[in-house]
Image (cartoon, rainbow, N blue to C red; front, side, top):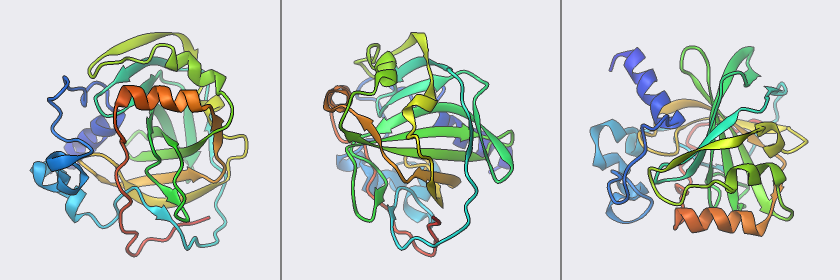
Length: 248
């Protein structure tokens, strides 16, 4: 495939500017049954990496390697302006102007979305909710900041989105108050790092994964509100690490 077309398809799949919205029952892949994760690779030739890829996500982060990881530079401002139900998750799209800097490169925040229970696990531990903050650089290379959430206290900033959560696949709403993604991150931002893939079809590889070591508090009611709308677990099972190193 032409590199530019590949990058564009990958970015569209992960960023999801409506590209993954389906009417109920029309999704080409699901999280269970004959169109579930174990079958993704055979559903479409474009999904072959789901079965054949060697650096797939999510993973169980274990046997971490000590490394001098440079801190992620977060330059976030309020920008979450639209919430949508794409049939697989609840996603908040983000206005231009917020970014992270990794490896000296700037990656713009495009959207964030959630999985329950968590997709990645840490030393075998699963969390009730995981957020993925999706970024892309000017060339279309992707970086995902993953945040684990535990049921402890209400996360007020998230309620700005949850109050407008679409109940039906294909539905989206404008948010009257901009969401600040920075408020959804833990105060301490040390992270683990590994090379992985999209966790949904087409499972494209070459994604920088940056997993926060510290979880963020959220309420039981907020987790339940998400799972009630999504209707089912929306986490892909962990994939083999193979020859990859998880840096800490």
